[in-house]
Amino acid sequence: MASISTRGNGRWFVRFIDLQGDRKTMSLDTRSERQATAIKLHLENILSAKGTGQTIDPATAAWLANLERDKAGRRLRLKLISAGLVDPTAGEPRPAESAAPDVLTLGKFLERYFAKRNDVKTSTQTNWAHTRRNLLGFFGNDKPLEKITVADAKDFERFLKTQAREGRYGDASKKDSLGLATRHKRIGNAKQFFQDAVDAELIPKNPFAGLESSRKANDERKFFVTQDAAYRVLEACPDADWRLLFALCRFGGMRCPSETLGFRLADVVWAKDRFMVRSPKTEHHEGKASRWVPIFPELRPYLTAAWEQAQPKQEFFLERFQGKSDAYLRTMLMKIIRRCGLDQWPKLFQNLRSSRQTELEETFPTHVVCAWMGNSPQVARAHYLQITDDHFHRATAETTGKASGALAVALQKRSTLAPQDVAQAGVTPTKPALNRMVSHDAPLEMGVTGLEPVTSTMSTWRSNQLI
Image (cartoon, rainbow, N blue to C red; front, side):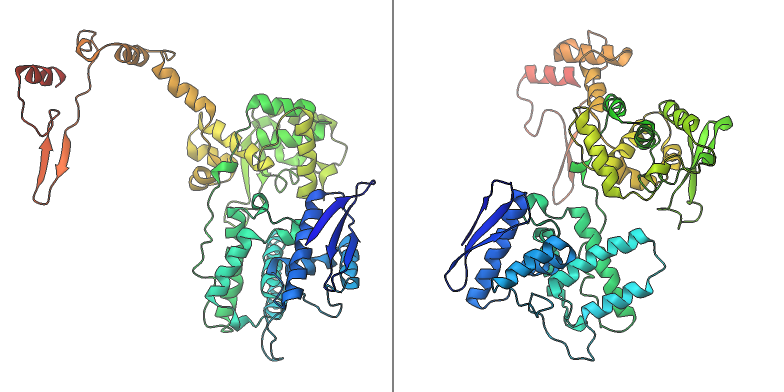
């Protein structure tokens, strides 16, 4: 129904047949094939809906609504209007259920909720805004709040799993679908919004109450950044500020950017070889607003260099990064990682912190490490601690003769001797455990010879030798 091609300047355009059967060409303000492909798919959805009289797909409706957010999107919307594919007077492209003037709509409710929740941080408001965008993109701004059912909530959950990212990034492929943790977070936010409506007696029950929203770690995205890789990245850092930022995450276990950018020169107590970390994430918990962390040997050179280069009256170590967004820091770190020839790992900053906690757990008690890292043992086990290649090497070394001590000698002898020679070699054999078979009447213990009776003296001799 539609196709895309590229021009000599690298920009893409789309060809399609309009509702009157005429061939049309529409220029796209993008040099990205992925974005051009996504626009083509949305265009096909619009043409199909217009031709059959059906409603526009929710993902395409959300995409159309988001076109108003930037200049390029607005230009594309005007082209769609010129082609007769979008109604210029329509506020929401997706047909929504109309509500009477006195009926509370989803859009009005969320507007009121956000207005009264000025008690939360800006980062929380930003996180909620993503959920709000998804809810309005799927249900529409004018959907009556009381008409949202449990079935609608489940449809929204499927929307998050398959198509929600399309409205933001222009691609609904499987690899770009929202991750499990993100989906659960947004379902949890929706639960919170609608529970407020229940508490205010605006609706009788919460349609999202039965959906899964617990925080679960995605082990596939855990990655252990070795110290060798860390030092390669540090060598590729362009200046002392970047080296300190990376070292604070990898060797100091600090959260980035909330803790690293708030790190002050006054927080370092050189006489006691420690520094204080202020934690905005946990400050709402009693006694968790800050914590003390040792100046680890790996961190000391970079901290010392930054201290010596500090300007008079400088408050923060990383003054130049103040006000920079998370996206800026991630983008710059990705460039540094590529510069040193390494592959980008998932969750760039969190896996640096996770790697440090995994290392420290090998040497210090869990409660000490968690105090330094600012989390709990439960959170550490679920989201931070990793199984590394070194764990496998150390475990297999014990059974391949590389371990030291009497255990290694015993294990090596046992692995090379035949069963009848174990006793002669001086290695204490392990007595086979009794097999227990459970019947409906009573448990029956069975020896190593099995259910059948011994039928020869050889079997009796071998049984006695093994036992």
